[in-house]
Length: 330
Length: 80
Image 1: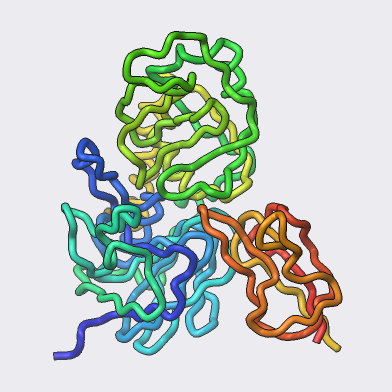
Image 2 (image 1 turned 180 degrees about the vertical axis):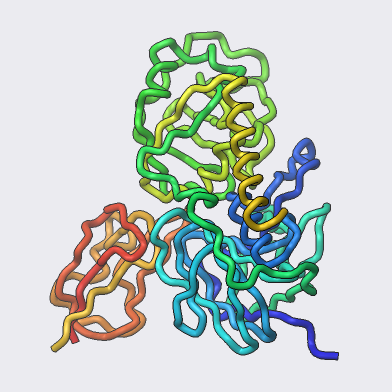
């Protein structure tokens, strides 16, 4: 029997991690959902190579890795515009292409978006931890040894389970375009909305915010908008003395905490599950993939939306997956 | 003499010195050896050094200290 198929990490990129669709069900124990920051892109990449939607792939942020394959493989790269190269020859994005044993997969500069997803037929074969192969690097859990890939790592590839769509390209109108400058992030005002003044309730949605360079898988921090003013109060028992403190509470995925009222942080896939900072609201689930593709210094605005609008947006996102399914199969 | 333009490998905030109190890594006219650090790019709470992969003389910087840079944006010119 031949050795197991694998790839060697020649260069790791900036922070390349194994991710699938995540590890839901443990947030109440403080274990975040993890998984791809842009789930649509990972699903599309998996379908191109004939994998189930939840197969593990690689998430490469800002800088692609260099990988050398020990066996033939079918690969697809989606998400950020970070052109893949095979032995130096550029390959199309959102397309299943063939890699032969001994060939090297590398990447050109990031041109748009932030995170590229690399799916390999058969999936990345790392052990499941609590039902997921996703890396939670902060907790040293899941993925490849609980961390981002490093040079010299030998990573196993699973056995392909379905026919790949070799040579097939997902058309542009089925993809989600990289977020443009001034992208709107829709958010529902939350339980603590009453804590800020009417003026701040207005300015939060009026101002332009730019992505802070420290934004990562845990949270996307924004700066540049007017600081929020709080309604005066006597701190309740258990809350800290800063006006942005609350009695410890649960932080939902997508919630926007604003420590000190200055820089909103949208909690993302590797977020902590609770704490004592006030949350101005929650970014709707339909717009969370988009946040995963924002670059540092990119300007955005928040837009207020109600529950009805949020549910309609969720249906539209489901329709995007349906269009992908019509094109390429589910 | 040929002039080469070196580009930013990643997006982030560009710094020309290791900390605000310290002098710049390199200034115009300085010799550059392979492996020399020319600046830092801050992104995701870490600072990635911009390391020279070719030797020569630093001719000009295209970015200022603390400028926002995009991947592929020209950082500096090297003459060799």
